[in-house]
Length: 94
Ligand code: SF4
Image (tube, rainbow, N blue to C red; front, side, top):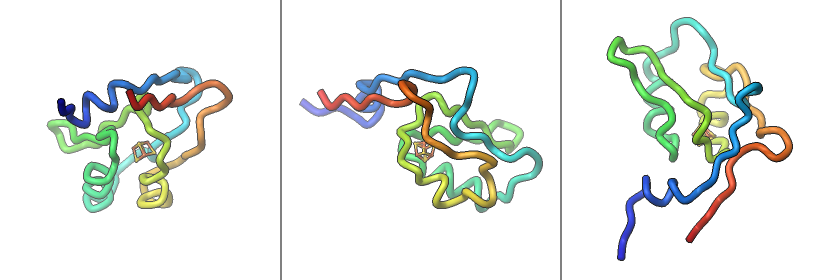
């Protein structure tokens, strides 16, 4: 039996802190090259393009890998920190 990435990610449990996003993007124009980096690199595919070319992001499915912080922490992100206390991803491999 084989499963795809989406199914595997769907096994994880996410306890989202709705009142305190752990990743916040900068506002305003963002360099297209930086956007492309994020779209290609995020393993959870949380960075997407809207029809008008603006960047869409939802921190709710974040795997807390830190890839976006390493790649674009100075150019795109205003904030990146681990979720507080009991919040965040709980990995399930079954
Ligand atoms: S930390 Fe990893 S999973 Fe979370 S948004 Fe950044 S690249 Fe995606």
